[in-house]
Amino acid sequence: MPLSFRVSRLSLVTLLALGCATSPLVHAEATAPAAQTAASVNTARWTFDGAIHNNSLALSPDETLAVVSYSQRPDIIVYDVRAKRVKAVLHGYVTPRNIVFSPSGDRIYISDSSLGTVTIIDAKNLKTIRTLPVGPGAFGTILSKDGKSLYINNEAASTVTRYDTGAFQPEAVITGFAQPRQGVRLSPDNGTLYVTNFLGDKITIVNTQTNKIDGEITGFKMLRAISVTADGTTLFAANSGTNSIAVVDIQNRKITNTIPVGKDPYGAALSPDGKFIYVGNLGDNSVSVVSVATQKVEATITGLKEPRQATVFTHDNRYAYVLNEDLSIVKIDRDNNSIVETLSPPTELKS
Image (cartoon, rainbow, N blue to C red; front, side, top):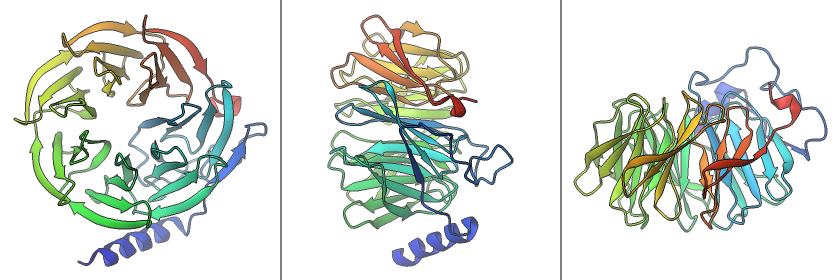
């Protein structure tokens, strides 16, 4: 089937399902009550895959903005990190799934599995630049190092779409997955894409030069977030089914160790210095800090609320930001692994 036909068909399906959904709206400075859109009214709302829950947190390259979402909430919060306050609330989403900044920091990409789109937002004025039609099920996303290619998991179609971000056109639709959701990572050289599959608990390996599947890694149980070391030799994967982090030898495509962590781990965020993995444990409201060298938990941070995959770090390695279920962000001092600050959402969005 020609690529253009596939994309057009996905676009048509999306429009038919939504009745021509409108573009997201911006609520600047969060000074007025949240807009009562069809998606935010506190009644039963239509979702394409609302039974699947996840959250997302993206920090701008200059570390001035933090953008957060939780798929059960239709609103996306933009925090001014330096001013320690809410800058804006973006409305009009249904089940937002993943958020990424462009390497330059001028764009924000937001996927929504019910809308079947990836919305491109201008990071300066928070207005919509473009909406990419990718079909219901649009989930995890990741940008290439140069920002020219956007990879989008589609858990409904079991595909990964590669978009040219300059031309706003799809470059390839890769098939052969089994409900790829949040987890997707590129190797440091951007030559390999690692995609988690909810069905089958496996990681699919994609050659980004050919846009073809090059193998898989199996042996996981309730696979969640993944991360890859800077040398490209080791992958870490959260197993919520065994309360552990799997250590994977990438060259041999084999799990070499499992590290016990907290209850129901979703996160596996590797610190910028490559020395620690921060694991958000949904089941016991904690973060496990795992040493890469010893492959043991060296600290447990408590006082969080249902943390999942959403953990990011400052460039200087000093702090980690972790997203709570209520869309508040905790700031963790990595020297002593303690919470030193909390950014909270507007009152009307806390419930």
